Amino acid sequence: MTLTGNMLIGQHTVTGSREAIRAIDPATNLVLEPAYPGGTTEQVDQACALAWSAFDSYRETSLEARAHFLESIASEIEALGDELIDRAVAESGLPRARIQGERGRTCGQLRTFARTVRAGEWLDVRVDNTQPQRQPLPRADLRQRQVPLGPVAVFGASNFPLAFSVAGGDTASALAAGCPVIVKAHSAHPGTSELVGQALARAVKACDLPPGVFSLLYGSGREVGIALVCDPRIKAVGFTGSRSGGIALCQAAAARAEPIPVYAEMSSINPVFLFPCALQARAEALAQGFVASLNQGAGQFCTNPGLVIARQGADLDRFIATAAQQILRSPAQTMLTPGIFSAYRNGIEALAGNPKADTAAAGLAAEGPNQCQTHLFVTQARDFLTDPSLQAEVFGSASLVVTCADDEQVRQVAEHLEGQLTATLHLDDGDLDNARALLPTLERKAGRLLVNGWPTGVEVCDAMVHGGPFPATSDARSTSVGTAAILRFLRPVCYQDFPDNLLPTALQHGNPLHLRRLLDGQREA
Ligand code: NAP
Image (cartoon, rainbow, N blue to C red; front, side, top):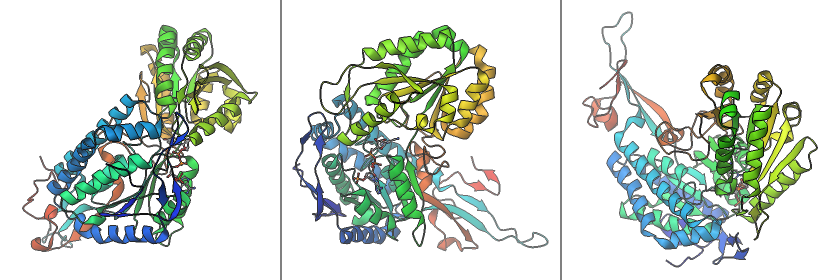
């Protein structure tokens, strides 16, 4: 397919007329064709009008039809073949194998949501049958189901050009819930976005769905993005990116005449706690695992281990020395965009210039543009507790070891942390009491707690939580990865004393969809 630089408003390809975006290959700094002119206010309005007109019919598609649609999107993406892989590699600087794996994850995610839609558990049907004889007053017949919120604006993420972009987790979960989606493509990978957008539009057509189920817009976040968030027909927002970007969208959404939820996944440094027995038994192995996780994807994961916390002593010194040796041999890696590289370099310079942080190691020097040189810093707990800049996310392969005088200082550091996506505990049997004492704090701080593993690598499954208190996300009650992500785009409606033939199918007395309902307080088998 020839890339056109066009947006998609439903089934129509349209050309924007605002300033054009051009992708840059971060490995060479070469500009990639074509140009992607930004959408106008009128085009945002058209996409929103079309999404709104599609909503009532799309939200009542059968479970089977919606599941089939999600599977069709996956098949259409696979049919793009190497063209998609080539373009995503060129636009992101990510290795080919990583992009291939990400395509597998994206398609697997869509199929997982298809399974979820078919099973229908997300409808969370609750039935309280009428009790006409109840004293002193009879009880009405009450039935509840979940309905979708309405059209959703999705902001593609720079660090997952497939799995968290046009047909990524936010889009898949919103479509699964029954919400039309308008994507504001990330400006770093417009060509990848166009290819996936075309695939998604083909699936809409093949499944005979209303065209407004999906649109794709390019342009600046401050113009196209804010116009989308402020449009009264948009009812929720999905975002992954910077803290400042996420906060700007939350503020715009809250200032609307009708405020709407923004599910923004922003900033996390993912603390790793090394407990004394584990550190004594395997400091070197822990250091090797840590550096492997730190270097993965040039550290451009929201779950990158950016903070290590442990009691000071010879075992922690062994950990730091081994990690430093590994880092000295770590090759520099191309980052996603010149902007992300520049933010990384600024973050490293700030830490290197901070008298409270010592540089433990720096990786091999860059051999090309936009390359991230892995860095490890060390600070003392008392400095970490008093200098907020030491807790700022440095997006890339950079981490800070916080050395604590005793267990009480470990607890103080944990208590001092901002909200996180993950918190990791490395422990042996002899550490269990220590770990147990820290858990209440960590449960308040993070969305996922892991033992004896590394936070990078997020499984797409039913039990996953990829969320956490601010600033990890803007709404700690949800997850953006895994099937529970569908809950973000639903709300409950109760139907009281409806005749059976006026009820939605899911709530009818004969339970034609064979759902496991909560019936008069008992979960059906
Ligand atoms: P970003 O700058 O937040 O951009 C993400 C999306 O939000 C883009 O579409 C952008 O539009 C839009 N946007 C940004 N600021 C906005 C604003 N004030 N108003 C409206 N829309 C806005 O994120 P990025 O480009 O992916 O990376 C920049 C930094 O974000 C990184 O250096 C890193 O610190 C952080 N980041 C964190 C994670 C994580 O998972 N924790 C992931 C990715 C990035 P434009 O097209 O105009 O840019």
